[in-house]
Length: 73
View 1: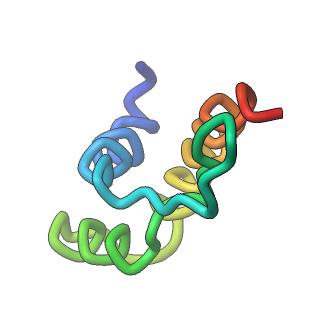
View 2 (view 1 turned 180 degrees about the vertical axis):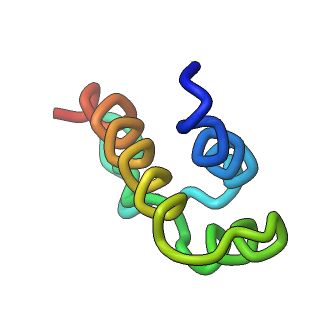
């Protein structure tokens, strides 16, 4: 783990219960992404200001969504 990614990873992990599902299909769930209001609370409580850590969390979210939803396609 590179040190510059650590803040984003810890915020991402703290948001583990903030995932939104878009729809249930015959195969399973389609995941929409993180609830950003929850992400904002985590960022503020950890003392992060600005958009740098949030942008990095969104990259992690995008990659996680590709893995979570790949079995649905």
